[in-house]
Image (tube, rainbow, N blue to C red; front, top):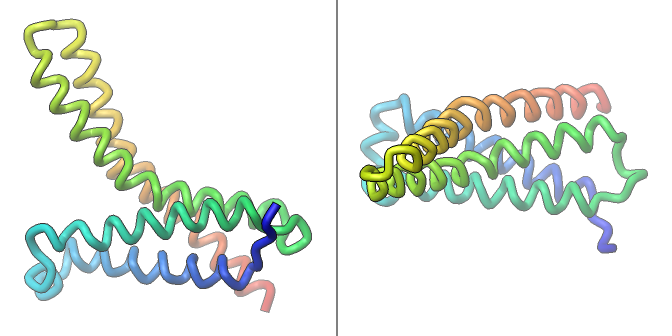
Length: 146
């Protein structure tokens, strides 16, 4: 198995933190909202998702001696939270569209609507919260090591 260094993981992790802060600013700071609009709005989300996937892959390839098990678990949580946002937004939209298409089949429409709502909740609340919790604990552990 390919062994990865903690240095690469730190670079990906800090890049994801920067992109996350930019996404939050993009949502709540009017000058940044004006700067990035239209289809460009999705680019930071896609970058954030790719960084999350990279963090998951690199953490998986991390040597066991490079970090402790707890730190590795929090890196997984951070990566999954980052990767999950865009995935669940996509699933929400897909389930919503399928629910509209199958609106004449009541049971299927209700099931797809429930899946759509669940995906939306995961994308908007659970994944960002998981990312924040994981990233905060990783940062605290990195500070403690110094």
